[in-house]
Length: 335
Image 1 (cartoon, one colour):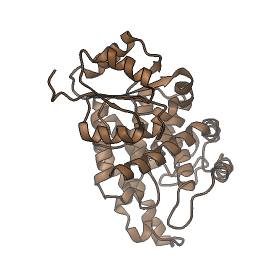
Image 2 (cartoon, rainbow, N blue to C red):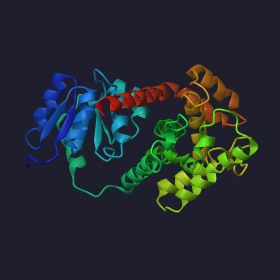
Image 3 (cartoon, rainbow, N blue to C red):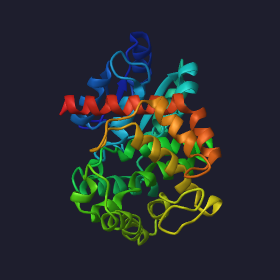
Image 4 (tube, one colour):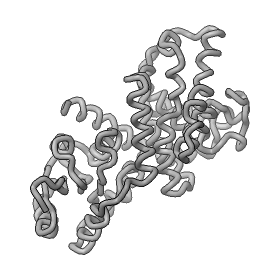
């Protein structure tokens, strides 16, 4: 081990837990430490650690916020990150931690800690999903600057909602990871729509609406040429996320279960996200009003089963929402 070896970063606010982990790992690893979420974000960007061990209960930022900030940044998304949680905290917040590379339940034994660190520090090529995740986020962030937030939306937040809903709907962990990436690209076709239409504060006329609807096919065509499963799923979502359960949507007028389930999931998450964020033409709606709107759309615009599932995991959805908003504030403060 040389002094140029990237460290294992331990983010732990409890002195006894930090000392115990340091004692186990110090003999074989270079270590660095952070005691708060903001310190962790700054340290990761400064040191580029080989692995992050992240306590979920920090004094300033929730662990979910730190995790989302790091996994939502293409520059740090590939760094392995393992959560350190009490059993109660882990079970309550599991869905909010989509994107983490593992979770250890405290108190962590020496053997568990060593095995976890060893398995994640073995030099190996990044998995195909890791590479696709970075490619997707690079596309999202570089294709048009802030173009994906021009309408007051946050694609990573909506994707996290969709992933939590997919998990609740019985999707496998691998499928949940795929939709957590793919859903973020659902509106990438808006890059082909003029700002004058995207940002218009008034109702679109018929011609403008036809141009707006074209973003589904534009997005599909941008993504469908890539063979990786994450991009194929993203292409399907981009094409069909404006279909409606009763068949009155676009572009194909599909109805019911003829609409791909991924698109049905994203439709629910997208409506909630749109209603609860500020848009050029209105302020964000309160959560209770947004949920009442979702319930009202069940059976017409949205699949009733998925609306019920979304409402059943609303506490998790709100934790994701709060965590990402806190992460945005932390990133802005650290910039």
